[in-house]
Length: 277
Image (tube, rainbow, N blue to C red; front, top):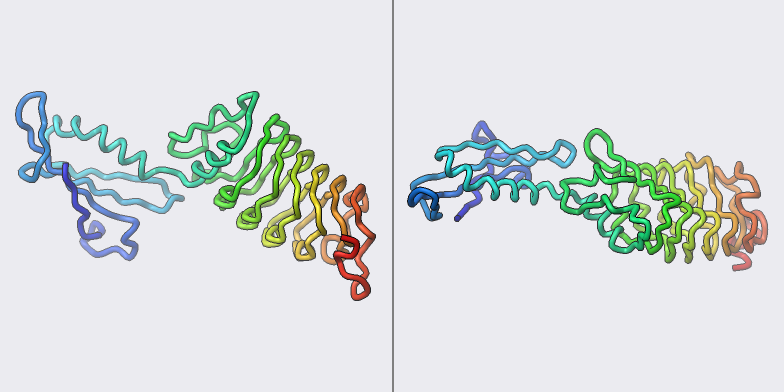
């Protein structure tokens, strides 16, 4: 079987603006007798015209055939394979990469099948009407392991619920790429290291609960710019420095900061915010 990429034309014969979004393949198949097929150059062309819409629109295939039914039967497995390949979902890849990092003794993630077109049928994953992942609910699932940078590829994620597990290691700075994130619940785990400053890029964030971990360092002052933040809890860690008083931090109760090594509320202009670290 041989194929060539043809000129990138739309149905009116006009070149498209996005050459990545549309292409054509030409197979030439010759039937050498009943039950057998050999593949070579013309005479029997089969043009498969594939227009790939953006991921939000899905994948659509339109077939223009000039061959017999037997040729279609011969090529059907190839076409199905092509469709599966083109439909590979980057969000599914990201979640499967996360799965490879985790220990799951109770098989909570058993349904996470990487061969599926997208992860919207997986348990604990919620998608919107456009098959984009918007929730990851793994709270209280007896999971252990670490997070990786691939989570930053879940561009449409709104809720990241990983509470009451045994996650460890650092919180990836790539989580700052989740611009639509509303809730990040990481409490009751074993996360360590510093709170990433990149979280300050999550302007839609309303709930940030990192309590009962092993976090160190100071609270990034950049978090004071999160005007939508309604709940913030870092109690029961090993944080130090001073407690911010600007922006939403003016409204958080002191219980949200207890059982750390803070030296008290920030005295602007008098002592550094990381005083005592």
